[in-house]
Structure formats: C-alpha cells, structure tokens
Image 1 (tube, rainbow over the protein chains, first blue to last red):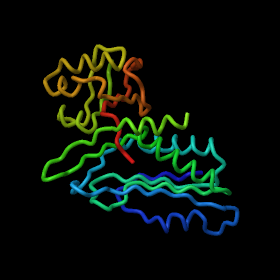
Image 2: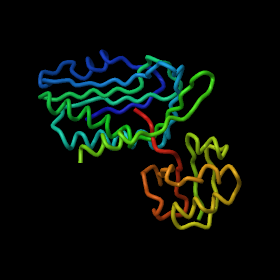
Image 3: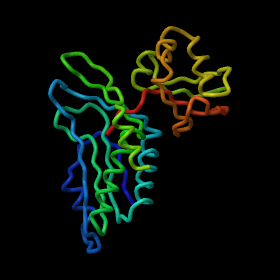
Image 4: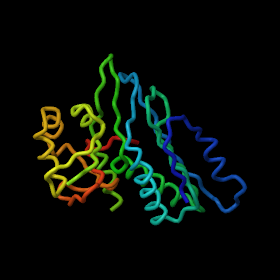
Length: 146
Length: 83
C-alpha cells in the first residue's frame, strides 16, 4: 500500500503526490513531509546504509502505519550517498480519506524511521568529517506512539 | 560458529573492513563481540563501549543476548541516524 524506495537520486514532492492522487476520487487528504540537509556549518553529508536491511526495515514501518491508521496509499523515499545543504533526504507522503489519518501516519513513519532504519549520517565541517550521534529526543518521539 | 559479519559507520572505520566471514567461539551476539575484541586493536577500539553499539541478526534488530546460528549474518553498528 505504501511504496518504499531507497535511492541515491533526488525526488520531487509534487510529482510524487501527483502520482498518488492521479485518477482517484476517494482521496480526501494528502499529508507529506520532506527532510532536508540543514546547512550552517555543515558543508556536506554522506548517508551510509545497510542495503540488505534498509528496504525491509522501511517496509515494516510502513506496514505498521497502514495497520494503525485508515490510509489509502503512500510513498516513502530515503536517499543515500553524499548530499549538500538544501538537498532533500527523505520523503513521506500519505493519502487517506480524512486528514487525521494522513497526518498521524506521516508523523509516525518519520518518528519510527529515525530510530528503526539502518542509516548513518556523516557530516563534513571545515574539511573534517564526523559521524552524527543519535539523539535521545528521537527515542522519545518514537515512544510517544506506544 | 561461522558468521557473516558486517560493520557500518565508525565501527567499519575502526575495524578497517566493511565485512568478513569468521568462525568464532560464541553462542550469542555479546560473546561474538568478546571474541572479535581479542583479534586486534581496531576491533577492541570499535567494541570498547558496548552501550554505543546496536546489532542486527539476519537483517532484524536484536539485543546482545540474542542467540547466534551457524551461517547467520551479524551486523554491528552505532545507533542509527537517518531521516
């Protein structure tokens, strides 16, 4: 029901939501989230992942969202490789008859993905690179759904 | 126990390998870490702080007390930071 893609290439939110709702009259809501590389001191970011596990982990999170809320479809895209400030990293778009289900499923997927999908970010700042540390807030954001 | 080992992020960098196949005297993930730590400074450095490590066995997250099986894929990595 939710299409999962893991890719190096960029994506376009407008195109993804157009595809989800094209030719349909049962959809009353599309909720979406796009995560971007935040700049400032960070000059670039490289996302490493565990190819054999990533798709499986994202599919499981998407299936859990579809189980919990009444949704009609969706797209989940996560990029890997080297990205620059302003580049899109992750996209979640969910369609539903009503906004409540679409908003909740979208937020749930992002909160679960932060702690449950095997990606690791390495930031480049001033010619040096360092691995991003996991945040306690991310575990708290996930646990609010239990 | 023969295992297909995979390392990611700074675990991979400290060990200097992204993966390897090894026969280890270990029944659990935790015991595999102890056996690997004895192999050299890179391993010892990567596994010095077990609370900073996470594990997946055959592509599912597991705890350090998870039982290993012959030929399993054991991935060792830091807490994930995607999204």
